[in-house]
Length: 184
Image (cartoon, rainbow, N blue to C red; front, side, top):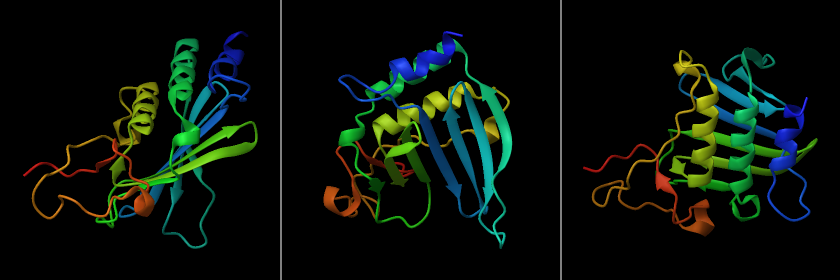
């Protein structure tokens, strides 16, 4: 049963901080009317689907459950250990786009959520590494359940060249890049 202890012992950084024990990533697809919610707790990844259009809104429905191997737990703990929660902004949003990628991340220690981050059309490297790792936990046939969050280079000309990505206005950082804006 040593694998039960791997994630709590390794995740959470140095010092006397308690480890991150739970991660939740909500991937909203407003045009399709649903969200996929990825919850990592204990030794498993659970994927839920939540309807955006039904009224009253039904509770999220479980669509997949994947057990994490001891190696995956170690990889997750190492990834979480590298995320500087105290330096992450609460949001990374490109104010020039009103649609596109909408992700919400929640990091918990025990029952307490210690950090929430909203991403709207910008890429943040640490969160990108986490989503790539979560995607690796999914079976190869589960392409429809993958989190689509990756970086494109910023266009240097044209309508998408700048936008309001000031840190104070949108939480953008130098490593943040616009979502799905190819160079012309």
